[in-house]
Amino acid sequence: MYKAEIHTDKGIMKVNFYEKDAPGTVANFVKLSKEGFYDGLNFHRVIPDFVIQGGCPDGTGAGGPGYSIDCETDGGNQYHDRGVLSMAHAGRNTGGSQFFICHSRNNTAHLDGVHTCFGKVYEGVEVIDEIRQGDKINKIVITEE
Image (cartoon, rainbow, N blue to C red):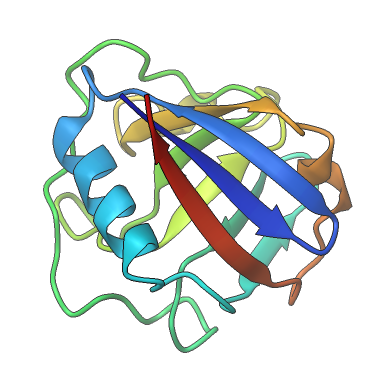
């Protein structure tokens, strides 16, 4: 079972993954994190009371890892609530490295069943509110339990 720590200048967000519900998405995120893919990338999209989004290597929202992964929206835990990590994409099965973290449930219900929820911040959730557009992901540390 994997866990992650997303290190930013605003603090650390600790994440539990939904490995049972989104195994391919979790494996992809863990792989990219271990390779250092996310280190130094910014949160290129921050919309208050909606999401913070990062994982684009060119910082514009148009980039990715050079491949796509399938959506996994049929399992449990596919509910976009405060602190939930979900894969961004440009259409079904086009995700890769970009992910977002939800501010709240207020404006995210329409994402359920469309974007793959693959984890949730369990500690440091207040950091989500502090992130501003352009803030960096210093590193993502993966641990195995």
